[in-house]
Length: 138
Image (cartoon, rainbow, N blue to C red; front, side, top):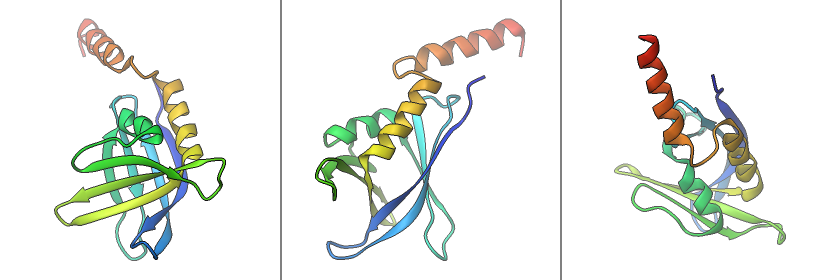
């Protein structure tokens, strides 16, 4: 059985061009839901906010603008000129939030998800699991 992959980091929540504050963020990947990543961030005084979106969307957004609709991801120049940052925009009917993170911890997290279940094998694994359950009568 493949295990849950988790990552913890601090991202900046961009309130405006002049104002941002750091917030703790948890990334989680469950090979049982092989195409999705859960991002949960914690705002002071509010319950945690979770978003689920595609693992491939996060990967693509590290190198080029990606996504449509509720979730968009794009690279930006980092504070350290040797490394890029990544912005993740989350939109709902209640508003929008933009989180900014260095790319390196996101790349590291995606690498760990790939070791748990290589990208491109998500459907094969899910189909195999269903077949095994059917064979074993579960």
